[in-house]
Image (tube, rainbow over all chains, first blue to last red; front, side, top):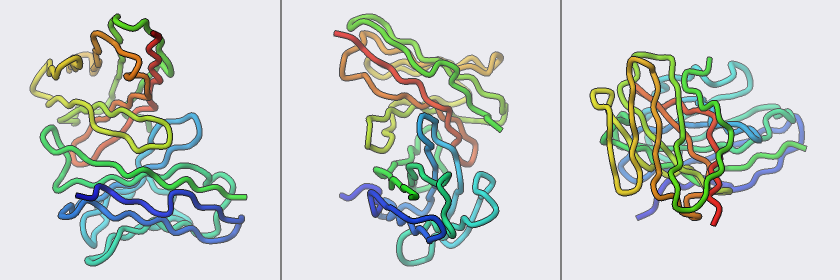
Length: 116
Length: 109
């Protein structure tokens, strides 16, 4: 009974490289959310995906960041040409349907990205 | 655009006393509210939720109160225990979830 699995747990990239963060939702969950937590800050919404569709990407920077949730396989958050300011913990959450009072979203343990 | 705000970054209480964590929101379209708890190096875990049509929900030592007219909710933990020490995030949503900045609760033995 695996929960949300994120990998890698830690990722180090040099400035200008690409970072690919993976999120395998709970089996059967079709809704995925990505959040970013900067040091000493809260969770900032980035993007909400539902199998193959981006529902809301209003929290994602328009350049260098992209997300996908293909029909098969994990959801991927991709950051191109990383900069130091991208260093943060990135959390993924999944839910079986639109989250609500009776539908909680489960979080992964996060990927800590460090850009050197 | 911070739609969910937790204005107290930290709170310290004595074991056995009540912890009250506060949260304000701006979007009147939110129809549910949740509290998550987070330990260092772990993902947030769900704690308790409340629908916008209710004003109180209780689960053991945890009670969430919602004041829609004030766009304010609070989480009460009583009695507080040292194991409750963590960062607590308030979240609100309609079709997705928006989180506050979190409040670090420290319960002293």
